[in-house]
Image (tube, rainbow over all chains, first blue to last red; front, side, top):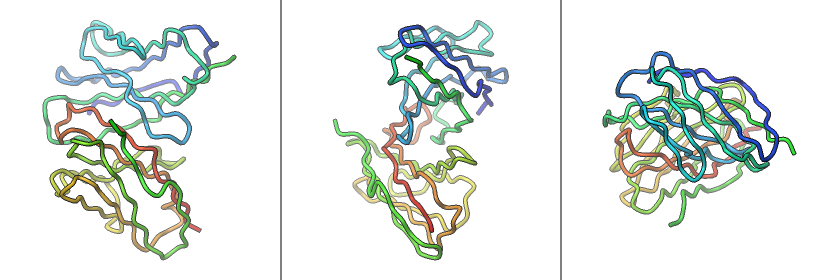
Amino acid sequence: DAKTTQPPSMDCAEGRAANLPCNHSTISGNEYVYWYRQIHSQGPQYIIHGLKNNETNEMASLIITEDRKSSTLILPHATLRDTAVYYCIVRSREGTGENNLFFGTGTRLTVIP
Amino acid sequence: KAGVTQTPRYLIKTRGQQVTLSCSPISGHRSVSWYQQTPGQGLQFLFEYFSETQRNKGNFPGRFSGRQFSNSRSEMNVSTLELGDSALYLCASSLSIQSYNEQFFGPGTRLTVL
């Protein structure tokens, strides 16, 4: 799976949009971008994933650049409960028979009141 | 639908002892993965079970083992505990072993080795 690079920490004011960047310059054509988050001492929570088109769900939006070398997770209206470590993971979805996720160090997002 | 459950949530053991942790996946999910999380190493993959067989394994010593039962419930065992085994142990379930299935994590078992 391709390696990802994320800033170690970010702050965001409550109610504002949180934009979390991720670089994955070695991503290959069959690899998707996944985002998970981990609230303190809880298990990671799946947020969203995408291949090349922008994606949106009830939790967040995912913007992937045209060359697919980077992406941004957007939390449109951050709340205090969004304070967590956010992990960007790149993995193949071609049924490789390997289901393990490679977590990097992630971005620690702190939402400030 | 109930989520992934792990028992116990907290555990304190002493060096040299052994420990067994349990994970019940989401109903209908047949794949269970285990991860170890420590402040120094972050989240690391231990192993994955599907249809009662270990399918993938991370880079951990043989003291770490696991198994899966016919109802997809899984246990992991750590023998001869070391101080460095203190960690949050996370279990994740998914529909099958294919990499396109999303994984759903349990709350974890926090193991402290004294």
